[in-house]
Image (cartoon, rainbow, N blue to C red; front, side, top):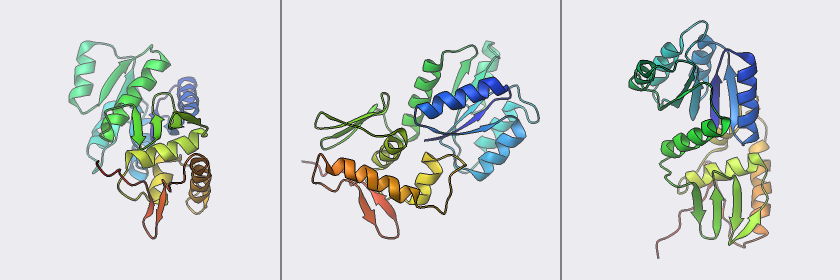
Length: 226
């Protein structure tokens, strides 16, 4: 999933980006409100972590801009403003969640997971199809109980396809949601990663779990009800 971290304190911004990237997220960053608005206009984010005390545009103005978009991202306000009135104002203005500073990174990441599950109509941490099971919390995968070793990027691709089971996902959509803004849209890196994931799946099952749909992308079929 692709996140935007909007935080003017450089050390905090870099620490958040580092920690979330290690958890497998594609992460972009903005140090002021104007930059955040510009990036939201260019890129499609699954979630924005938003500070309120920003140079340029205030965080509440950034939130207003995000809410006005056709497909608005989830917004988690992360702010030192801890008064009840501030929290109510942020939530009433369209924020999905509000976490005050100081905070524990583990709680922040748990809230991000919860909001992303809500975004994609996913109520359980475990994604399953047949013998394949992905744990979105632990970032682990198994087939019929046998652990599978995926890199964070490989897991993120497979997770995105599992969330969208039943419809083709284009390479462009995967680049938009699994890579950050450094991704090269003209490279074949999606194809390469899909090939690696398929090879690892074929080591445990003969089923073609990820199908290529000409002109549409990659598809994991939903299971037929028994």
